[in-house]
Image (cartoon, rainbow, N blue to C red; front, top):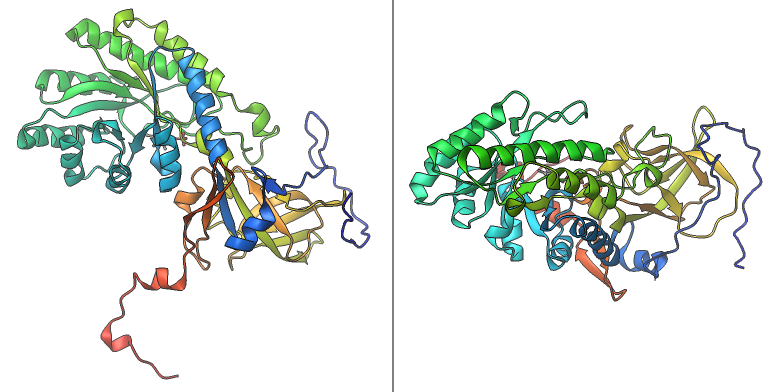
Length: 452
Ligand SMILES: *Cc1c(COP(=O)(O)O)cnc(C)c1O
């Protein structure tokens, strides 16, 4: 066994805390390697902090999700939710696995095209599709999911202008027993607005109605909510069959499956409570096959799963800057990972592990980031070993949303590497530097000089 570094003895206040079903877990397991690559080696080469993505985990998770649906429903297609993580390398892994692209802005649309995704494999969602973006999407035969009536009218106009019949679906919002309800996107099911939209598309006849879409929320812990959503969309599809003899190509139930992260304040860990892909797949598939849609007309089932496919594959590595006693005696540790690069620390109790073996001494510690801001708290109360300045830590399950919502604030956004399936470490995004920021700025002539 390796000789552990000396730690001074401490007298600590016993803190009862909140035991879970299995008591209070205090054993700390270090994370010294990711996919058999040493954390220390990666940090020596690429600096700190450092985001790490496991290609293996991306592919394994995708295949697990795909299998869960393929074994229960005849036709399944995933579309990768770009906003969840649109690093090109990450998108490419999912596209190699067969996923289409799901985008919510002109920028994301262009990113997918530039990566080589064909227009007909791009789903264009969101409330803000610019006229010029829609023209490109129409000419590329992309699947446009209408969010509101104004967008429908614009599409009718563009159909005349382009001489094409755009392929559209409507986004439907609905009551699936989850409150607050996400009712700001799309057309409401319960008050008849969805039918109003469908009837207009069918009677005006300028658009090609190819599918139905919903996205009920994010981090949804209830698979029953998906059963209801799929059943309601299937009801609309069956209604279209009956009323117009119109057969839809697909039903898209959106994203929102929970990842294994633990929400702040949750009693049990997310790994124990989040439904698995099988549970979601069971609910959705059974709602569709048991619906009134004729068996020969079963639509393609599209899933826009984001978070649950990518969260586990992401890590952020960081370094202890200092330890401090707060005025009330609490221990606090300052890391070089701030909330500006780890947005999800606002709602997740992230798992923070030391990157070296540690003794069993632990103390409840508040983990701060390096920003000069009071809100820069990575974790309010982490049971942590006594780490020293320079010690390294690994924060797990950070693959979703952090590498898209991160912001350059006080510090630079760091490098991102991907550990390939061959265990080689590839740099997939450079770290920002002063020049990166300054290259965007312009200095008015009269401000170029000063004397102090
Ligand atoms: C964000 C989003 C997704 C992905 O959601 P996750 O919670 O990450 O699975 C899918 N579809 C739409 C329309 C979205 O806006």
